[in-house]
Image (cartoon, rainbow, N blue to C red; front, top):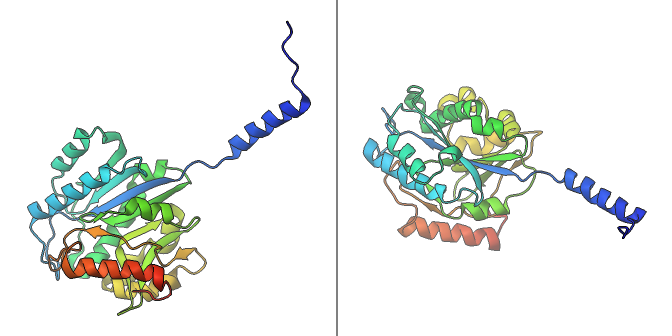
Length: 272
C-alpha cells in the first residue's frame, strides 16, 4: 500500500516549524561570580579578619549556591585575590560531583589594594575575572553574570533572576533613602555591559570606589547603555557583615529587609 501523500500545506507547515525552531534563541546562561578575600591585609574598617572564619563563610555560601546549579545557574566562578589555600572549597565542589560546573580563579598572587578600600580591590578583582574566566568566555553571547560578595547567601537568588528584566547591559540596586548609595553586594551584567559600564572603574576612581559615590557616578558613566538601576525584588541576604560582624538575617537587619521588600511593592518610586 502506498503511503499517503503529503499535501503542500503539510510540507510547508513542517518546514515553517523547522525554520521557527531554528530561530529560537538559546536559553540565557546565568553565571554566578563569587568574589573572595580569605586573608585580608591592612583592611580599613574591617572587623571580620580571621582567615579561618572567612574561609568557613565562603564554604557555607559556596555550598548553598552549588544547590542552584541548573536551578537556574549554569555555573559558578569563584575568584580569590589573597593567594590563600582553597583546597577545602575544591573538595566541596568535587564531593557534589560538580567540578565541571565551577571554575576557580585563585592563587594567581596577592592583589588586595587595601590602601584604596575594599570596593576598589573588588573591582580590580572583577576586571581580572571578567578577562580570565573561561566559563564566561565560552558562555557565548546569551549570558548574564551575577556577581555576589562571596561570603553572602542570597536566599531568593533564583526568584531575583527569574524576575529580572530582559535585555539589560547592567542590573543594579540603588537607594535614595535615608541616604543615596548603590548596593554592591549583588549586581548583574552582560560581558559587553561590563566592558562598557564597569571595566576600569577602580582605576578611574581610586579610593572613591565606594557605595555612596557609585550611586551618582555610575549612571553618568553608563550613558548610552541600558543600566537598570533598581531590583524588582529585595535580596534576602544571609551572612555576616565584614565591617562590624552584624548578621543580615537577624534582628534589626532582618526587619530592614522586610521593610524594603514591602516598599518595593507598596511604594516602588521610594527607593529605600
